Length: 400
Ligand SMILES: Cc1ncc(COP(=O)(O)O)c(C=O)c1O
Image 1 (cartoon, helix red, strand yellow):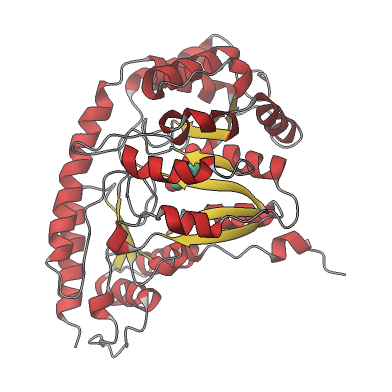
Image 2 (cartoon, rainbow, N blue to C red):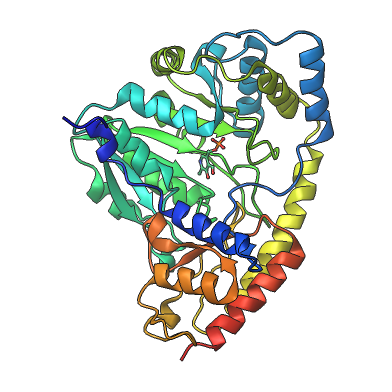
């Protein structure tokens, strides 16, 4: 009898870990490596948020809280949904967890039975398929092709829906592509969902605040109020407020689902850190102006990275609407050979050779379910980005 569970056997080890392990090994061996793999802002958490956490400690807010969130924080989350998304929620419709990740996981654990299908647009955030598998469900992928801006079409969504479909996971702006859906593009998808009342919608709005130019964020329950009763709108403070280490995410949706998610949390982790919850309250209620300041920096970096990557031979890099990632294609490099004699057969070989031969760590597209591409995170300094893009240009020029 195996000691490890059969459920675990369904889950793959994270392919992104191989890249970061390799980068760490090369760094330890003294090689100059630039990492473009980070999924977090390089900015520090704003001072007012840190001060709120310190004040919470000094006030003795160091005990268990309500399992799925402080009432004060739930109130602030309701106000945020009203203010930013025009959505009305009561505190009983809100759940707070240890990061957006726990929220999504709780929702899947609370709802999936063996054989239930979850539609995931590809390329996808690496955790979605494995969370679905851990919860006993079956991921069903719908490809968002590069020529369609990495967005799925309503026809492809329609074709993927079966009587077994329980959830459709929606993520805009997206990790790994940065692609965002306009209101009209999202409405075309919600029109399909309106015709299938058994499908629930999990909207992962983690990158809501990180959008550039005149792109306007929108979320399914706002675009189609008819979906309100079957949508879980998920968000968190990790990305917008540079609070990845604090571990606070939240969601709002139908009260029975929220209650079920709380039940999972009550028997696993209980409440997220009391101190982090008070910090998140300040993040949501406090000044928001630093978000625009950070976004100006991100936009400048995005533009530089897109321009420099498009100058690299064999690379085609679309301009994304948000998040802090770009997802260029390396179709023009496939079949070529590196100076070290490595034949670029796919994006994994490309990323490994780029790391070994030029010291630049990126994550290959197959990890996110769409090839031949790679993901660059531009949440790092301008100098490091410029040097890394120059090395990518040199690498591509050296291919024959
Ligand atoms: C699309 C997406 N959703 C959710 C998360 C999880 O965020 P958190 O750090 O709050 O768990 C991430 C983090 O990388 C993400 O990229």
